[in-house]
Image: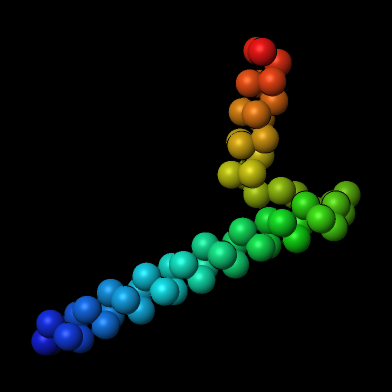
Length: 59
Protein backbone atom coordinates (compact mmCIF):
# COMPACT_ATOMS: atom_id res chain seq x y z
CA UNK A 1 0.00 0.00 0.00
CA UNK A 2 1.37 3.38 -0.90
CA UNK A 3 1.32 6.44 1.29
CA UNK A 4 -1.32 8.07 -0.90
CA UNK A 5 -3.74 5.19 -0.44
CA UNK A 6 -3.20 5.31 3.32
CA UNK A 7 -3.87 9.04 3.47
CA UNK A 8 -7.00 8.61 1.37
CA UNK A 9 -8.25 5.85 3.66
CA UNK A 10 -7.65 8.02 6.73
CA UNK A 11 -9.48 10.93 5.15
CA UNK A 12 -12.42 8.74 4.19
CA UNK A 13 -12.50 7.26 7.68
CA UNK A 14 -12.61 10.72 9.22
CA UNK A 15 -15.39 11.79 6.87
CA UNK A 16 -17.43 8.70 7.77
CA UNK A 17 -16.87 9.30 11.48
CA UNK A 18 -17.97 12.92 11.14
CA UNK A 19 -21.10 11.90 9.24
CA UNK A 20 -21.98 9.34 11.91
CA UNK A 21 -21.44 11.92 14.65
CA UNK A 22 -23.67 14.45 12.90
CA UNK A 23 -26.30 11.82 12.20
CA UNK A 24 -26.42 10.76 15.84
CA UNK A 25 -26.72 14.40 16.96
CA UNK A 26 -29.60 14.93 14.55
CA UNK A 27 -31.21 11.71 15.76
CA UNK A 28 -31.04 12.86 19.39
CA UNK A 29 -32.51 16.24 18.51
CA UNK A 30 -35.26 14.53 16.54
CA UNK A 31 -36.14 12.30 19.49
CA UNK A 32 -36.22 15.31 21.82
CA UNK A 33 -38.38 17.34 19.45
CA UNK A 34 -40.97 14.63 18.92
CA UNK A 35 -41.27 13.88 22.62
CA UNK A 36 -42.84 10.50 22.14
CA UNK A 37 -43.77 9.00 25.51
CA UNK A 38 -42.49 5.52 24.62
CA UNK A 39 -39.17 6.67 23.13
CA UNK A 40 -36.18 6.06 25.38
CA UNK A 41 -33.47 8.73 25.24
CA UNK A 42 -29.94 7.59 24.59
CA UNK A 43 -27.84 6.63 27.64
CA UNK A 44 -25.38 9.42 26.89
CA UNK A 45 -28.20 11.95 26.81
CA UNK A 46 -29.57 10.59 30.08
CA UNK A 47 -26.18 10.93 31.78
CA UNK A 48 -25.76 14.50 30.54
CA UNK A 49 -29.23 15.46 31.71
CA UNK A 50 -28.73 13.90 35.13
CA UNK A 51 -25.42 15.74 35.56
CA UNK A 52 -27.01 19.07 34.67
CA UNK A 53 -29.84 18.44 37.13
CA UNK A 54 -27.30 17.65 39.86
CA UNK A 55 -25.34 20.80 39.08
CA UNK A 56 -28.50 22.91 39.23
CA UNK A 57 -29.49 21.45 42.59
CA UNK A 58 -26.04 22.15 44.06
CA UNK A 59 -26.12 25.84 43.15
